[in-house]
Length: 566
Image 1: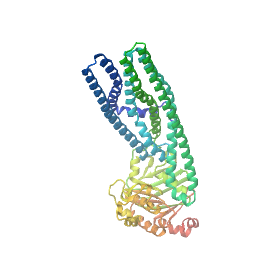
Image 2: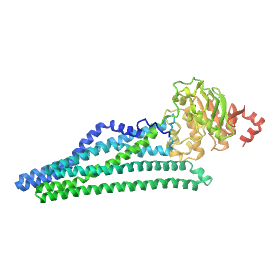
Image 3: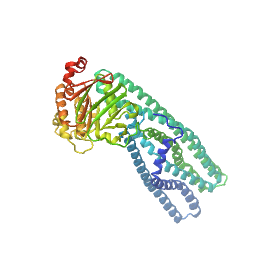
Image 4: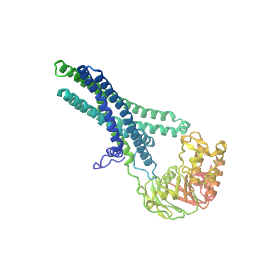
């Protein structure tokens, strides 16, 4: 990803501010309830000290009953405030994580690609783990404030007994937080690096799953698994580093808290021995020294979680603040369906120029497969118009001047490796559920045998990436989806490479029949599709070198005959 301008505000901090701002109400309620919980927790040893003090003085059953009632009120307050406080905060946390997951997913699904150097597996990690850890800030702040309330109440109570005890708590807390704040910065940096390495490992395993069959086919699976092992080992080592840093942090925090608690207890004991505080105040001080360890532990862990949330927010910002690769225009194509490529230079394309008139079925035989892929990328607007020379026109308008929505309405480019989703045959063919011409698309793509093979028919369940379908079935399902969309201009890239010759012949005739009167461009080396086309364009060395019907080219062009004859 391009380095942002140094003058721009840090996007991770902006994400955290947004999360905090839109959850102010829940955080205030949670802070009040958790503050009440911590105050009640701290009040318990104070109440015990007062009970000892007054019961020993009065020695009456009435005082004892009032004391027991007071303890019951405190315990009830602790229980209810914790229960409802955590419910409010966790609901807000979960809701906020959901919002960020949706935003990251929406960025990945936008029709205009973003200029971000991340693979799909990395984006998945950001949309799950990083979104959750960023939303944790909703709980961290109220817990931080409520822990501060407990420390403050303890400090005030101890100061009333003896000012030195209160100052000891305050000074000790400041010292502990100063040490841990320094350590938390390393945790944030280590965590960010761990998340990046885990995301890379996830992206690698996703790539392996996609290419598992071909890897087995040419014996490359061992090398690929070795590559994944190296990436995963890097992630493991970084995870161990993070665990070690976290362990040192937790151990240091616990040791410092214990030292402070011991210092308060010993000081209180010395003051009681000197007669400077009463026995009840000693009980209170020792009790507070024990109870204060929990809020101190929570208080000391908060900087670590803040740094983790900051690191996750910075990773989310890689996706959310990435600029689109192109800025779409406001215009719409003129109805009709003409497609024109005028002098396009990109990758292996060296000034390709041709026109597909409205309603025409044209095939392009690319002698170099890379050229077909480059042309498909340009037509699909996967390459920004400013990133290549020449122009592409849809309906007489330059594609750079069109809104991306209108391009998607009029022009559909179906890739050779169309993704298959978990769901059913029906939801894969018609994802939007608009009830378009599914039956006609199934017939034309020769997917009828798959539908007939299962009693559920079109409602047959499909696993993620079409794992329960063969390669040919997945390709025909992708073709059926493209045909069902009934786009004004349809571009198919190698739609039949995984099907047998007989099925290919039937598909070619069916597609030509179904698309009659609609503009269709097929990038293929299939003789059946080339023969079904109204005319064939030869793409060689990045330019159109010949144009005729398939049969005329077979008869008069020896190079064409060698390239496409099977």
